[in-house]
Image 1: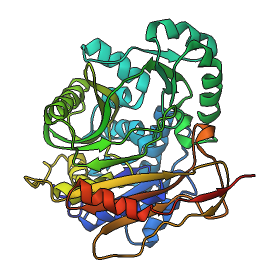
Image 2 (image 1 turned 180 degrees about the vertical axis):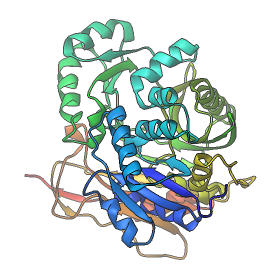
Image 3 (image 1 turned 180 degrees about the horizontal axis):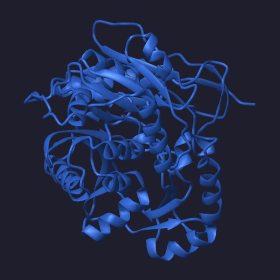
Length: 421
């Protein structure tokens, strides 16, 4: 078996920004068959020559039902895959079930489920004796009040299923619970984001102090063969909306090493022994703690940052894992540069009248990308709404952190303007 010519089924193509991921797999020689819900944008990947086939399968949010639909679509089309994978959070539990049913390489269904659900992550961590914050499942305001004395304040209320800190809010006192519960409930709906088709239960857990990191792992035969660490900037509390990150980190080396060790031990204890994983964790005053475990590659441009800094192709590594091939990676011994990913939010609620992001090329900087999320004229929400509207993401590189920060400051030197209603 080799990647060249392998028939690989992609279960759930995700948002359009993931087009580059599928193009990279095709570039490596894989023949892609994409299975997604009717009318999905990914159908165009066949016309673009990235995929050889596209199949429709109804998606309802129940992993067993959705896996059954995918298997039926594959059987009807006569597709005998060599491997099955996904890079989409919403589909990882479905993908694991499809792989298991077909006898193809994958992490175990129960392991993926434990990572997919933040409630199961906490329950399994406690059972395994891993350091973990106090946590309880919450289905109603009464249950939130009942859980508060156990979790204690400050605490965090967030959805069992979710991504990008959607619906995550810090709560400092019991008097805030009704307002916070109502706010989070307004976000955790399938209408707000399809990820919540998987369920709308909440979890309340102990607040973790310290510095947060993204740890990207490549696992092979139960061992970690590569890790990359990105240091997150302080979030916009009381929400936990990301403000930025830089890779590699400049935090205390021993603390970072301890954090990576906990991430690897957690992955192994969970049974996540193959492929690319994305684990978020904090270096706290009481030692390293896991924030969440993702049985998939990190989203956004994470794979680009890792390749830029360490010359490691996470897409290729994950593709090879689904074919039961060892990862073909040779990381740089030292970081090749520093990457910064900075997020820009609306400064107030109203109509966006100016977004003067300077993207003119200059010889003294390396601006990798500006990903706009809105257009001038759009209605936006500011921090007073707790979940502010993201305007853009800026990705830059520099020879070191100081140089990269200077580039970001230059790009963002003129702030956006919002006209209040």
